[in-house]
Image 1: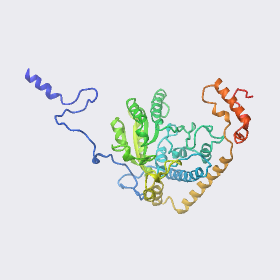
Image 2: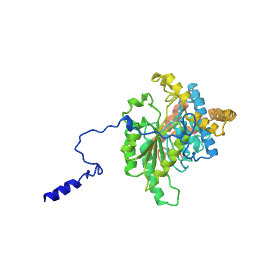
Image 3: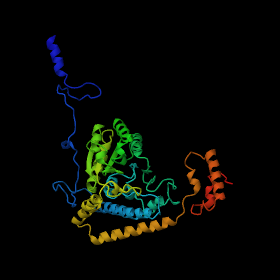
Image 4: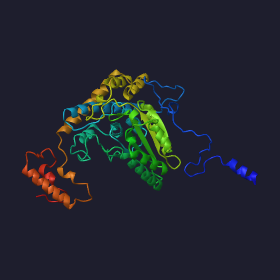
Amino acid sequence: MSDHVTRVVLTVRSVHFPGAVNSKFTSSLSFSRASEDDAMPTYRILDQEGRIIDQSQAPPDISTDLLLKMYKDMVTVSIMDIIMFDAQRQGRISFYMVSAGEEGIAVGSASSLTNRDPMFAQYRETGIFQYRGFTPADFMAQLFATKDDPIKGRSMPVHYGSHKHNIHAISSTLATQIPHAAGAAYAVKLQDMQNPTDERRVVACYFGEGAASEGDFHAALNIAATRSCPVLFICRNNGFAISTPTLEQYRGDGIASRGVGYGIDTIRVDGNDILAVREVTRRARELALKDGCRPVLIEAMSYRVSHHSTSDDSFAYRAKVEVEDWKRRDNPITRLRKYMESQGLWDESKEKELRSEARKQILEAYRKAEKEKHPAVANMMTDVYESVTEEQREQMEKLKKLVERYPDEYDLSGYEGGSSGLKLPGVRVG
C-alpha cells in the first residue's frame, strides 16, 4: 500500500486545478516580478538612417509602386496636419489633431490589410483613411462639416468615418472602439464561416497606450481571446496620454505584456519603421486567421512630437528641446526617405514636387470646402431613430419659431436649404 501511495505522489507534479493546468508544483516560496531583462524586444527592419539592419535577411517583399504610395501618403498627411492645425488657430475650424511622428503606424498597417477588413480608429489614424482612398475633398468635407460630409456635420473635426472604405466612425469617448472591434470581429468570424467562398476578414482596432488604461481595453482583450476573434489590436505607444507620461501610467513592460497575460499572440514593433510595421501587420493578419482564428496585439512604439490636440499645450509638461530632438533624430517619413534614396528611388527634386503638389491639392480642397454650405439643419434630427418621433417634430417646430423670432442670431443662409432646411422628411413645418 505504501508503495502505491508513493507512486501516486511522485506522478502529481503539476497543478490540475482548472484555473492553471500547466503550473508546476514547488516548495520554494518566491514572488514573480518582471525585470528589465524580461522586456519584450522591438522588431525593426530599418535603422534610423534607413539602412536594412540584417543584410542576411531577404529584402522587404514590397513593390516600388507600393513603397512610393506609402511614402506619398505619409507626406500628404503630414502636410495636411500643418495646414489644418494653423486653420484651427485662425478660427476657421473648431478642433484638430495631428499625427506627426505616427504616420508610419497608420499607413504601414493599412498597407497589409485588405479593403474588406473593417477598421476601428481612435483619432490619430488619418493615414488609414488616406491609404484607403480618402481625397483632400473628403477630409475637408468632414473638417468643415459641409453638405458633402457623409456624417452630415454631426461629429466634431477629425472624427472621420467611411462606409465605403469599411472604417467605422471615430468617437471621442476614449477606448469605446476596442470592445466594439472585438464584437465586430466575432461577427465577422461567424459571417465568414457561413460564407466560406468569400475572402476571410480580420478587424483592425487602433488606440493609444493611454486608452489601454481604460476598463474597455481589458474587457475587449479577454472577450477576443476567449471567443477566438480575428482582431488585430494595434496600440500606438507614443509616450503620452495627453499630459500623462507612460512612467505615470503603468509599471509593467508597456502594453505588450498585457497581451501575453490574456493569452494573446503579441509583438512589439518600431513604429517609426514603416516597413517593419507593414511586415508585422501582414504576419499578424495571417496569424489571426489561422486555426479557427485568434486575436493579435501589436504594440507600435513611437513618440508624439505634436501637442495632443489643438486644445493642448504639451510644453507645459515636457521640454521643447526633447520634442525637437525627436523631430531631428528620427521619424517615419525621414527614415523611409533615406531608404528610398539608398535604393535610387527618390531624390530632392521628387521631394519638392511631391510636397508642392500635395500642398496645392489640399489648399484647393480647403478653399472650396470653406465656401460650401453646411448640411440642412433638419439633419440633426434624422437618423437618430428609425422614424421621426413626435418629440422631434415638436422640437423642430420650436426651433423654427426661434429662428423666425431672432433672424439675426440664427442666420441659416450658410446651411443647405436655408430656413426650408428645417423641414423634416415627411413632416410639414409651419
